[in-house]
Image (cartoon, rainbow, N blue to C red; front, side):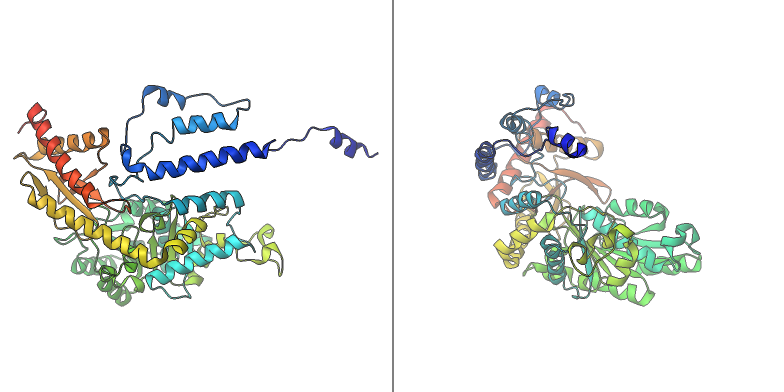
Length: 495
């Protein structure tokens, strides 16, 4: 007998598969039952709660060296992670701008993990589904079928993809070969003073620096001032700078303001600029029958960033970058080493999806989006967007009707900013409203965030939640007023 084969035969080979699949199957049924209960009863739980010391200490345990029963491992997860969530699936979670997930999408994530495909590319079904979901995103936003796109982790990365293509297209040199130092004239990107912080990160990551991003003043509605933008472009050209790209907001993170996308597209075309739309807040309003007009012109963009894990309610994480010029998109990222060359047949005969982004290894993000779209249909998802926008209008009316509450401005889409106002100003008013926000969180009533609008502090409600009902908003107003009076009576703040 061959010695090597004999040696192999004597080795006790191991696997991560269970010794008894029946035990795993029984536990899996329990996990699914618990998951259904978790979502069904979400409204009955606090939105958020602070973790006690013993739960925090659990996460400082040392590296496990030996096995533990799977049922015991699940018990620990249930007691700690599942019991103290961020809260964004709760109907009264309105902090920042979060998605609220859906059960079908969660099943999709589970099946994607079970199937285990790497979406870097190749000839397999998951790759075709990935392309199909990108094509559906193009159709939702009115982009041409010839455009390209890629699924990414979220909006920040989707914006970086679009802005990277813009940089390379407008650099005037082969940036990939020679680097940004070889660009003859500095490139300038433009966005309003309300743009998301990810655009600064993009400028830094692209080697252009924060100064390459020129923030343009906004009007009373916090939309980019088109005249000021045009003047800035002319000024930069005269100073020897190359205007390269204008970034339009299809919904700002602070207030939901939507730039005049048609006017920006026209200006970009006239000035020879790349037109990128940050649509992570509101691009998908394009599918909402009552509000689609608000994002008219988005279909004229050169690139768009959007987030299916927001208003398509996919579980985190999944974003999407769309690029009108598919050749420019692929030219920006494609690298073909010998171990990733295509073959005429077989596994390597499919498209290499990693040619359109930074990741070589990519998770199967498409399935959770695909399954929910198939189950609910785009018309229902569009109606849910309209529903959230109507709910914010309802909340604004409640705030206006309450003498102790103050509205920052009439909402544009699904974000409203307000505060409790007992006659204070400055830091005292900010301290009072911050305390209201924290107590709403700590008492498990609602999760809000805060922000600055026109130089003043406000509480912020962003509704992207398909579980939210109008009686939740009635409760928010009652509790905000109650807490405001309670804190004021305690003497915690003074004028």
